[in-house]
Image (cartoon, rainbow, N blue to C red; front, side, top):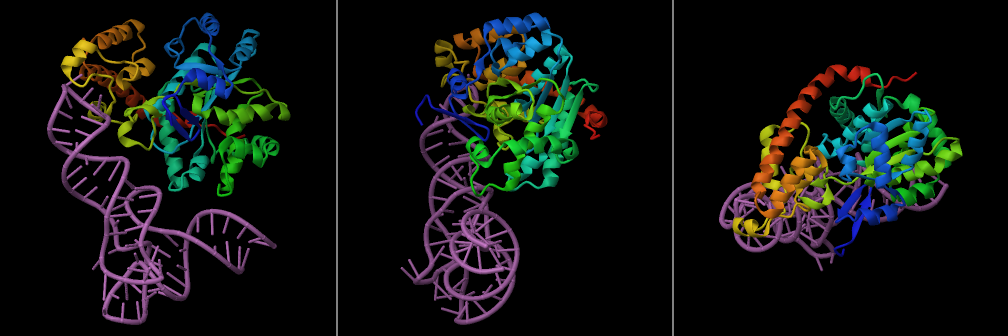
Length: 370
RNA sequence: GGGUUCGUAGCCUAGCCUGGUAGGGCGAUGGUCUCCAAAACCAUCGAUCGUCGGUUCAAAUCCGAUCGGGCCCA
């Protein structure tokens, strides 16, 4: 693989991703400065994740806004495959979704695909994926979604609601489509083959436009959904994509729930966070202190800086100072790490409190089949 | 239901034909180095070879059964 090559698929992310190229490759649209202005005008705020290009691409977001301005509300949908504990990378689209819900005052559906992870992970039992679904739901709720307008769908639990929609979808997708989209082969179990219709189902759960915030690697799932939507008399789902959150161990991968040391979990203790960052976070610093003072660090590849940019330092002024000081060599990598550790731990202290409370709130968030 | 193929440490895999109680790669862990991380170098941990039984002085290796995965056919 040469230096400018990269791979982005729902099951594998590798290389140094050129997001402009990816937009062309996937056929999505870049979030333009005009679109940013428009969102800012409607919401009265420009969210730092938009401003900084963490959310960088979309499909038909303009249509959603057109409808909204006409008085036609949309709804939000995102989800999670419960294959393990939640890590901070998962929180990015969820936090953004929470902001969207606040600003647009819309309904939100969160799908936990416990069946899919059971199908796709040879070693996971259905009991385990159900357990992780519960754990992941707590993290989702902890972010503060409106209980009146937010429903959590668990596939194995809410199949009664999902199935009739999935059946409509499934009839319009043939084996060739799924093979081309997901790389299915003759050894793929039939659960996986049917599954994509279940993942599409929440897009059509309300007869309104839907907007899906998600990691760009998950885009292919919804290309298929967009293709079949008109065939079943529904609107195509609109999407807004975030960049891949790098693993602690560096650019060239995304944070993965199965990579223990490269990943900060929402349940990590302060000392675990400190240890993981100090011991594993890839840095853009120089080999030794003398050179660092002289040459300065590279924030673009420094994972600690990137985490601050993507998630933990919403204040542009503060981020700018960190950027400048690191680049000039004034700030050492160890010191930068200390800033990040403090930020993560104060975030997690609150999050973990909310997560505990979520155990008592979960009932009101769970979708009830009619 | 028939056929075929595979099952060796967290993962990939050598060895099986020509029986003598496993070798490598990745990963993991520790150390040196570094303000950290990475890279590099050094070191360490880790497999009763799917299971049960048989043959044999001796089986991952041969035989039988069984369980599990894959594919083809019906």
